[in-house]
Length: 611
Image (tube, rainbow, N blue to C red; front, side, top):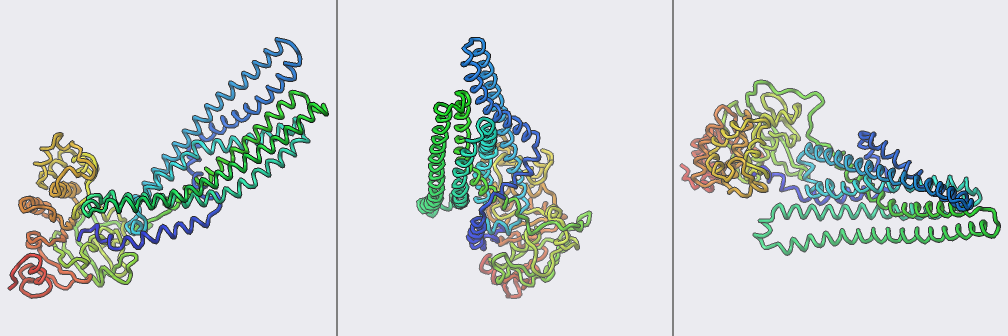
């Protein structure tokens, strides 16, 4: 069993439970506190935020200034019956409109720039934090859900920071400014307008809470659909091999339809809120116009210009309040997205460097020790993968781990790489307990070649360079030759620079495995971990790679998980595992003659006659 499969046995129970728990927690939140998570990113780019604020204030002031210019044109221009006066006030109105255009353009640019920059920073921070999370986290959360947060949720945040927040602030300033000017124009009517604004805003905030809850649910359902799509696309060959395309498409359709249903409920709530606001705004504006018309044309307590300005200001204030109904829904939706993003940013690995890590000795010796180790995967605490496991490996020794599937062989590798820490006992490299060491330093001492080792899109050279940043082209080519990969790599159309496609699927299984072995050789680590490293090779390729591995293992401590006879025979020592314990140890000849578990495995797996 490969090292990746060790976690796969326990993945689904945790993965199913975690989203439900998270959804319950999110469902209880009704405020906008998650939006505070944007604060540090906005402060980081305070210059752009300040310029956006300046242009926002200028554009709002210019908008209100248009009403004053229109009033002056009516009362001082038209009433004067002078062509010069009319031309002068038209020029003033034109100047205010020009200022409005320039200020609006500046606001649009700096708000958009700020939104793009903030989202880029969050996306970088998200990915960097995800890269630090340990294996246990991904037993609970699917990678597709993580990708949904990094794409869909961040798009929602970008839309708000780069657009909706500008509209919302502009509307708030417009309402405040319009009410202020209205007080100056006609204090008596302003109280009436303010009362109407309060009646409009009250249902806006009440319905907004429901919109936010529905937004969070819709985003969660969509993330679950994306997570399932990622799983099936990742294993498309398996889906097709079992003829399950229609079933997978049906299950994805069900997930998408569920997300659509929740989104539709959110849209209905927003539509109802918009209709309510528009009705209230229309009614309020009608009442204001009726009362102002009486004041201007019946009571003669207001000039025609003042009436014109009052109407403009009332329409501006009402329109701004109505637009708040639209933007408030976006704000609520963004709060839900930021809550999910905040959860991912706040996630911390359980496997981390201690405050004062103990440095591993230099130069490295490559000594390995497992002292009465007990370990169980999360969610399977009652079924330990290692149970009282003891193993000592001398520097430079080649040890083969043998046992039936589920014996704990791959778990040994995962603890050595410090993907997990043992529940009891200790794992040591060169005498240092790995819990006291920095995981990055521990992993720098090891090179892994896993069964069906994953490769990446890009060229062969880029895949080789993944083993050691900064390695020269000559060193990379030399590693390829050592791993018996140079012949097929140089035969590619562009040699080492040939793009290999997603996960290097243009190569055969044996070619991919040899490239993975070359990548491990590039790392030049003192400890080499081989997890069924030759399982994908035919007899000829295995012979070539075995020669490469002999050279690679020289001077290195090597742990091998293998069922292939050639690798087991060349080990200095064979450790036989069963139920997470060491049950036998010795050479091939010694173990074959004892008639124990190894002898039975040899007879079943290798077809050997046991003496």
